[in-house]
Length: 79
Image (tube, rainbow, N blue to C red):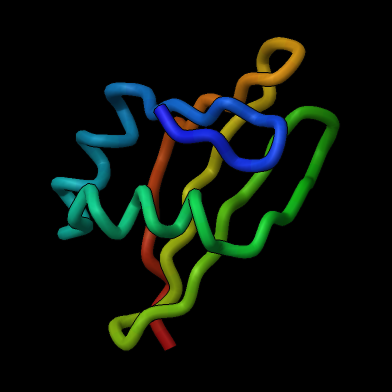
């Protein structure tokens, strides 16, 4: 779990499974959530986006409760 502003961000099991499949190290996932750009879309969804040499890492999550975000998937966007 990580705090970002007023939000408590946690990762679902599915996010870790997808990260392993896509070659993402957990340290990079945490750094993206902690320091990446926040993009809100839809009513309750949010993306944490950060640029790396390999490409752009995107962690997609959902606002569930008053101050909690659950990250449910992780993906690379290649240049």
